[in-house]
Amino acid sequence: MRRRLIKARIREVVAHFIESEGHRAEIDVASENAGDAVVRLRVRGQAVSVGTSERDPTYFSVSIAFALPDFVSEPAQSAPTLLDLQASFKAVKFFFAQGGTVLVAAIEQFSSTPEEFTQQFWRIIGIVRDAGAAAVERVLDRNESKAAAEKFINDFMRGQDQR
Image 1 (cartoon, rainbow, N blue to C red):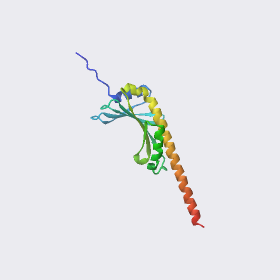
Image 2: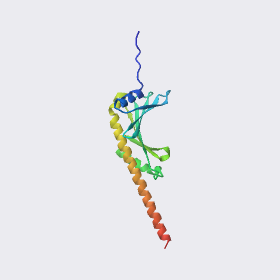
Image 3: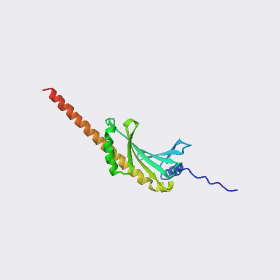
Image 4: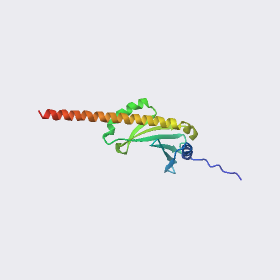
């Protein structure tokens, strides 16, 4: 009688790697039929999401969400800032989520095997973290500068009205 080898799902290979590195991994299956799943872990207090697909076993994504403070009132105005950052972090995509209260930095990676992906795993996380931190810093600087300029103009106009 021949034993049938059961091939591990890609998400399980990635989760096993993460756990072997000393982190807790949680698998969230978006759709069992589609084969899409997200493996979640925490790295230095940040939630990291790793997307996998059984339909395309070469596709992986790594994303980190960064919470933005309340004073970032119009994240759409930060789009030019994020586009400028694309020049420095060419592989990283930036987008806003949850109504503009969260900035997400993500990389899509194509690897021939899950093992090839895991060899690059920590380097990819480092790039996403650095890019996300730089993006948050620039968005905050832009919003703080805009708020300071608006305050100056308002104070100036009030001073003109009182003469």
